[in-house]
Length: 167
Image (cartoon, rainbow, N blue to C red; front, side):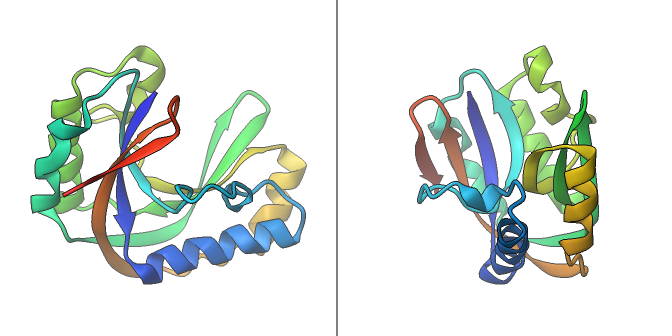
């Protein structure tokens, strides 16, 4: 699995990491639990079974762009939930997403939520939360609207666990 991701500026990165830390402090699932150097707040634009990172090098010409963290968004699957910070949709953000989605090609059905007109922009805080743990997590998350920028982009190869920075 490959994903194309936008990287936030230091202020937005810090805000998301602070939420990760609050969840960790309460012994809840948190995206901050992963100690890998490649683990950082990001905004996923596309996920596909296979991608060629060099195909996306031109998207950095579209950066930086404004990124606004709104409130929280809850994504569910069966009896588990993903808690994330919502990223407010803007025309420039949609333009970057459309460019990446077109370069990536039609998503496989299990990644259809990253396709054009199907995308929910967000930055993940925690995965695999039960309803009880979700309620506890919601009391801990501070979700002020913050406006910053997406200042970088990368391709994450989940199988090889490698990152290719785009320039």
